[in-house]
Length: 138
Image (tube, rainbow, N blue to C red; front, side, top):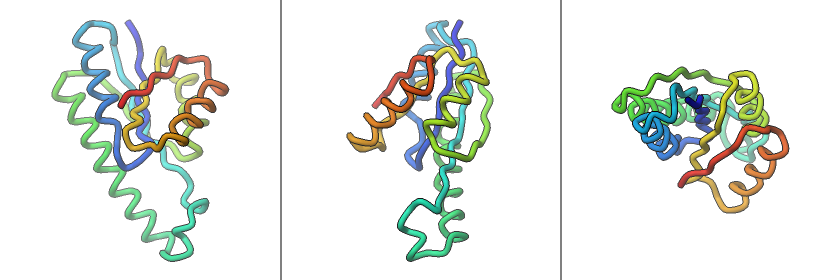
């Protein structure tokens, strides 16, 4: 039985990854799922020049909370046992360290909200940082 890691890296959430995890749970391939909500540093974005950091953090927190609720609802409906945690830092490093520390057997990353270049650069960095297999779903 596998332990699955599903990272939520943006406001689009990880609904497709959660659906894939629910399918694998129904097929008795997955025993548990860990959801990691990854919050990146806002200081690196150009939007801080136009908006206050406090307002941007509130908007990001609300968007990520909605994404987390949608992802958790899919797993709850399927009866999948899961745990979740919130981690701050660069997404690739957080995912790699969460996979290593949580002893995940597989990472399922929802790439529906990612552009082509970000998707492939993230996959390349993850391949360099972790030995855990990474699956992109769309």
